[in-house]
Length: 217
Image 1 (cartoon, helix red, strand yellow):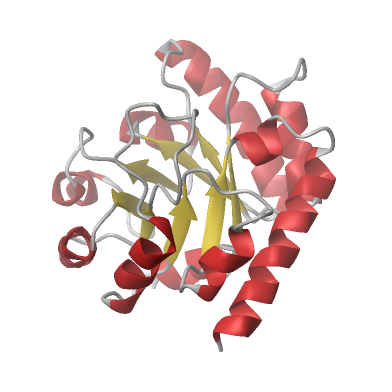
Image 2: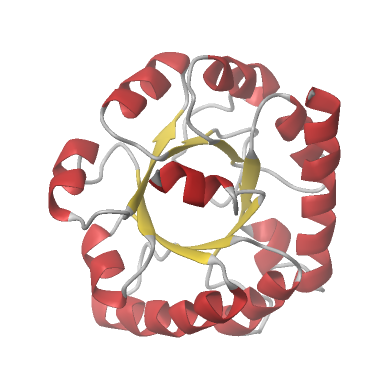
């Protein structure tokens, strides 16, 4: 199953942001992949489509080289053009069922959820994984829903067989707690993109996730 392929690389998803402390997005992503990130999500809210395709193509080279997965946030069309492994969809994006109808077999589709009911619906509609959050308030997404906290992660993980990824305000201080609450992994923006050493930041985040998983057993 497609979800099984994702689950094997789910511990840490590095989400891109143009604010990289003076470095290029590709440079930071390459460093995060060296640190163990198993997936990258191209997130570019304000970039022209042509520029997004150019960046996505460069990121695809990096993820293939590292044996990692590449997702595109919101834009199924861009994901298909650059040969990404999947796309992540939110409330305002192409509906899951419509997206599934146009993507090839094996293409991974994630869905943002913040309640157990939304998780159940997304699973029925064909999601391969769920992005659950925000875990806590984050300046990276000012229009996000209220933070669901660890109880929200726990409630979502309890009602679905899909891999759950905690997102929103995740860093090394709470990544392990999210895993202990049932998240199979975490997705981060600032904790990697603005880190002094993205490779070490990725390694530290993964270590926390692994410790949390052990605690959850």
